[in-house]
Image (cartoon, rainbow, N blue to C red; front, side, top):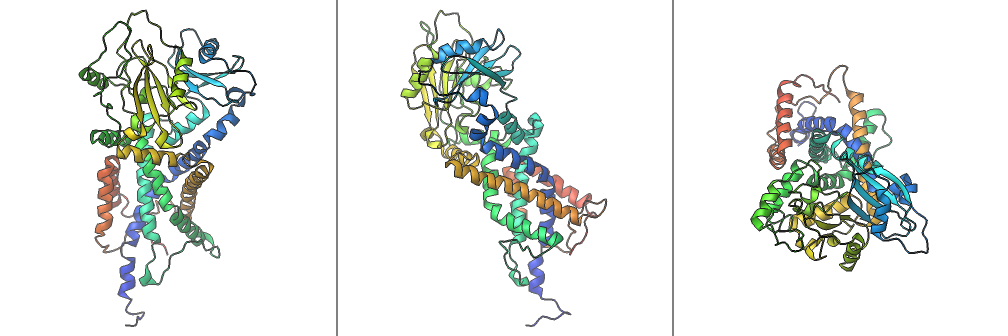
Length: 489
């Protein structure tokens, strides 16, 4: 059947059904996430290269001249580090690095509650300087990435931005998808012969389709670390025996046994301790979990594992030297680039937290502070299926799994998302009517689009916080933005 100007091809009309609806939702998602994508792109790229950047940022603290003489033991170095902090400061962790050109780092909790790192030359014991843990550049970068330095509200905003990025990606792919009935074909490369807004649109579309899979993977691997959905997701995975290892909810008692004292608590008592879990940063109180320890970052799977601490006890017993614990960890296969968290109380334990690039090598080891007995040794094989998948996703997300190549790929995806936000903003600005939002106009008699609706419902069910905002956007679209669109060619 031929097509005439008087009678348009019904197939072409059908092909465009729902296009403006998708475009409208793509517009709303993009308008919301654009500024946050730029922040995520910059901070994420910087964090990917943390290993290379930090020695350049703090060369006089982190880097030393290798010497032929043996390094001083950790306990002697700790004594030197104590001279650089105010009286009453408490050592809480040691960053164990065996590289010949790296300084020794000890983290202290100061009397005012802040934490400070002290760097010591491991060869002569000279104090090289201090850094605030919270104000360290990469820590600020990480907190910007996770919560915009705004605490819990910022964390929720960034979580929402990540979820709405999924909507932006889905609608973007749907808009790009070739509509053969209209004679359109897929475009994988920008058409640089175009000018003005069509050129920006071509660049935006081609870049988006290349980034779609990587961008979606980035979002999905980052969400388990969020403070709202990620926390509940970890709890759900744990309760289904698919997440953290056994003992995450206090079903295993883990604590140092004071000499001459009976072992305690019971499993029931440990569960009660876990219920007392707090997040106020006081690492001397009972009921802590791994997330509360002064550890820069620990494996996702062990975040809910309780750390034993049942309060002070007046027993004349001395903890083992730190150097002995470091040697013991090396004998267990963990020798470099890990955190040794010191006991938080008389009944606490030494905690070896090893978070390497290869998830299969992750370890969390609890060691009795008096006898040196290994109380628990949590390995990758102890994780549930979900936690194992999250571990691999995290390593890839952070650009750690396959070295420099992974860093470059992660940076390209991250910066590509930032570029998508910028090109989208330029397109919007060029077509935006004066003093109006400039949302794409509604289409008359839009089809039901059951698949699209089902997708939004599914996203809302999986991410309840996002589900609430989807409802709000739908209401605003119906009753607030109804007359704010403008038809464009």
